[in-house]
Image 1 (spheres, rainbow, N blue to C red):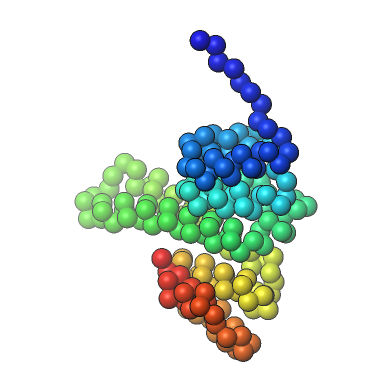
Image 2: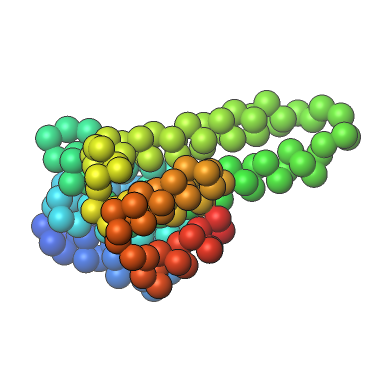
Length: 196
């Protein structure tokens, strides 16, 4: 049987196809996203944050990170890194990955050194560094973060709660209160459940 390779669709069809494959949980979504990353296929600016966010939401961390790294530099970076939804998804995914690796270390604690220990420690450090980068770029895009729009500040607070920095997260919520912006139900949920 002969195998044929077909080129990826171009223009608006490509992000549409990837979104569809992600939504139906197709393994082809990862393959298509990998091809976008490897071949540097053009994706319209207005589709980038949503695509990377959706890839992060379904756990495709390597590809989401690769695309985030590509699109977080250059002329159009500002709109990309400033997305609250994208920042939350990336922080959430990589914090989850970091905790999984920390759990492996905790399970092995007291049982002596093991062959992959340094590799796991390196992953934990790498994930933490990437989380810090995503949050720093987001904060820089909204500088000063204390003067940011209500939703932006709430998203930043949520990210801080996700990574376990409750002191800074609470300080962000207090900034909203100091501006006499009453918390809505979403803000309360962020405060109460953001640590998950």
